[in-house]
Structures are given as structure tokens and as C-alpha cells.
Length: 58
Image (cartoon, rainbow, N blue to C red; front, top):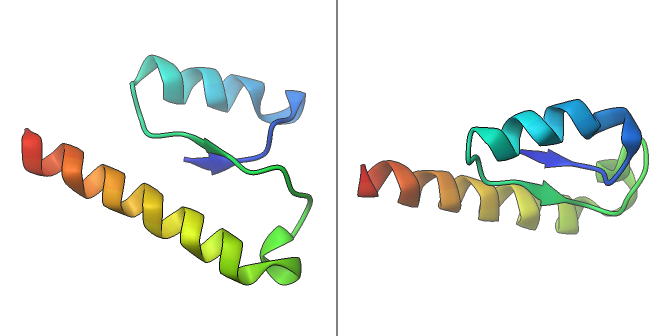
């Protein structure tokens, strides 16, 4: 899960942590992918890699 460190997403972050999902907090803003697409893409690829590794271990 890629989200921002904000109280707005606190419930979703808590749920992701409780499910032991990979979680990445990106210090950005609304539509951050428009401002820094390379960073957002890198972080999403890292999360996809983490998810794939977890599924491979199962």
C-alpha cells in the first residue's frame, strides 16, 4: 500500500499494518505522481516486488 503520512489515511494504514501488508508512506501531496513520477513509480515497483516476494514465500 502506498499512501501519505496523514491522519486522513490513518484507518487504511492501520488496516494494512494489521494485515501485515507492505506499506510505504510517501511524503507527498495530492496527485504527487504528477510532480515526481519517477519516485512514485519506483516506490510502486518496490511494493510490487515486496508483494511478489511474499507470495513466492507462501
